Length: 173
Image (cartoon, rainbow, N blue to C red; front, side, top):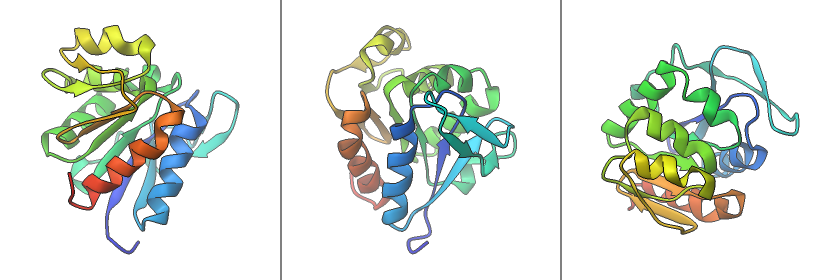
């Protein structure tokens, strides 16, 4: 890809289709390599059955090889957060100052990764209590950027969400 950046997109069964594919296509349009990172299976099915093929396994993924991570919603984050490797990967990227972009229920992974304390974020309203209990300040806004943490509420927020991710990946903020 033209700018040499690589973004991991976490995938698991019951993912929200638009929250995986919209960022993937927009990032690719911007010349950024995307990698679908799964938890060990070759393929995952969305909430509606749409398949995504894993291109990497979280058990082998290293944060130093990626410039950012996208954590989509759906029910998938509740499965993803059960893997220590997922939580460690997200926390390592976060601590390295790299963008962690989480939308909708994806904040469940951020809570389990222990990266929300003291941060301001948004999410799908049903996850608000989990986010607050993890030490974050919740705001109901289409997208919230707090240093390297980018959060959004739902699929309707994807244009603003990806715009902010691209801005951080291109050195803005």
